[in-house]
Image (tube, rainbow, N blue to C red):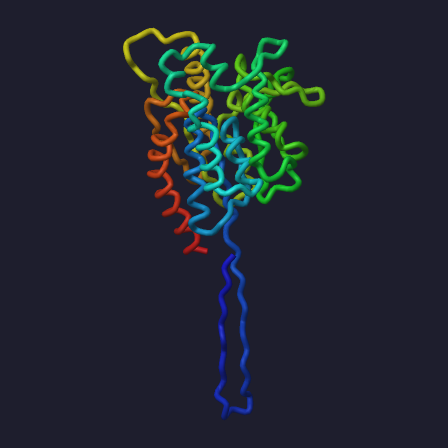
Amino acid sequence: MFEIYLILVISQSSPFFFLYTFHYISVMKKIGISLGAGGARGLAHIIILEAFEELNIKPHIISGSSIGAIIGAAYASGMTTQEMKKSVAELILSKKFKFTEFYKKYDVFKIIDMLDVSLSTTGFFKGDKFISFYKKKIKTYNFSNLEIPIKIVATEYWNKKEHHFTSGNLIDAVRASYALPTLFTPMKLGAGLFMDGGMVNPLPYDIIKDECDYVIAVDVSSKKGINNNEIPNALDSLFASFQIMQNSILTQKLKSTKPDLLLEIDIKDVRMFEFNKVKEIWKEAEKQKKILIEELEKIVIND
């Protein structure tokens, strides 16, 4: 919000002398931001959100899918980008996770060790320790207490439909949104069974368009795989197939509806769970952050 004051002064010699202040209030455009799915590449969202902090403005609303929901909910709860960066360093850059060694072999046993997960009776991974860490960092567990509204996307398994969480337990919604099939346990909430939101809407800018004057979409999907002329292992094939599906969904959606600003962060040679490459991810995101700052400044000036 911007305030403009106009002071009108009539000569003191005039019988109509007075001093009057007109106070105009100009309300800034409602800016929405959508944070897309993309595994480790989604850490770039933190850098993009820095643009809002540097200009001292807040989004009107956020939408997020998968890791976009994780980052978006944390920011909407009141966490700063610096707090998120510290949390990333604490969780990901800690020596106990041994990410470098993990990616030398990239097998299921290393995944279990890296994610620090426990097997459920269904054969999926619960991921309890990550969500426990997340709950210690986030500022609230409920949608009603958020500083910024957020819509979190998940896939409802039984009805095969897209679902938007906008109220209730925030942690459950986030957990549902990143429940990648075959890796994390689906979230059973009420009569529904929920899985990763990237299966139906990997970049959910369309679900906030009616509530904003200007919508920003942040695409962190993988556009080109690592080509080393080798047949990928089972896990690489699974994750890459998931990313190909997401790209196809987004390509078709962009043909019918577009955001006002699409930021495509071209992060190369980073696989879905290569969180150890966070420094490279953040470096690449800085390029799109500069573009966003320029665009946001134009909106501020025009308002």
